[in-house]
Length: 142
Image 1 (cartoon, rainbow, N blue to C red):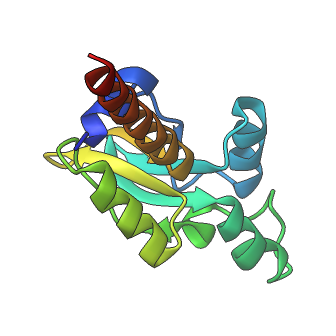
Image 2 (image 1 turned 180 degrees about the vertical axis):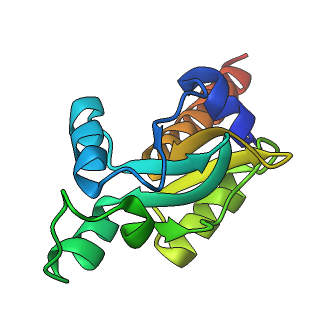
């Protein structure tokens, strides 16, 4: 079974992060510019939280707050569930499905090293199954 390391090798380990003092509006601008749906909140390369489209809807818009006047500290999800590079795709898929997560930060020794999305996991699992099927077909034809 492949691990998160396999995804990061293909995807890269760059992440988009802001500080808790940044405004929600700044996070939304970054998310739009990068075509992403989540931003990590860090302090000195240490993960403090995650801000997602879901956080925006539930903690800003529905609460009648201003995105320009609300700091990410107020709207982020603090201490998000994290994974490591050694975690399997299957374990991450189960974690994401069971908890309705769309993104998981990857942390090693307390340092943020990447982030994966549910799309990354699904693509990798589909490729793994395709490779296994191709291998079986080659075996049967030899």
